[in-house]
Amino acid sequence: MRHKSSLHIRWADLDAFGHINNAVYLVYVQEARADFTWYARKARGEQPILADMVVARAEIDFIEPIYEGGINVDVEIYVTRIGSASFDLAYEISHDGVIKSKAMTVQVAVSMETKKSRPLNEMEREFLSQYLDPLSEAK
Image 1: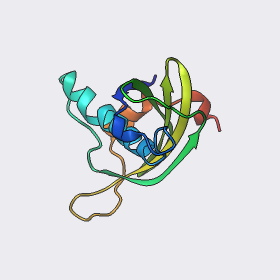
Image 2: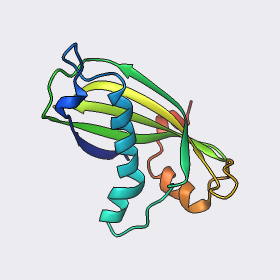
Image 3: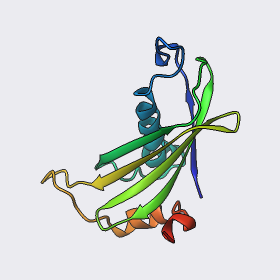
């Protein structure tokens, strides 16, 4: 299963080359991740989850530029790995069904008291497992 968010491309997202600036893709990934763990869950009457995580790593592959503002892009998220205190998320950013970029982030669950990593709890593991890509799990 994948989580899908729709994000609006603002005029300010475009750079001097007339395409979405590379740094903005991390904002799209962040917004989609917040929807995945917080806003979409609240809209369904569920408790937000994994609010106490940090990004330990991020990488983006730029496949095809987006030259237009004022449109929406889709961001699909799925889980590729669940560790003891961390997990990996994969993202596909597309427009009109064409993948424009792919991203990956590593999140680490953090104790808000100690500011150090903490183990994922059973509820978090269960949530993440719903989105675990079986092909990634086999690697």
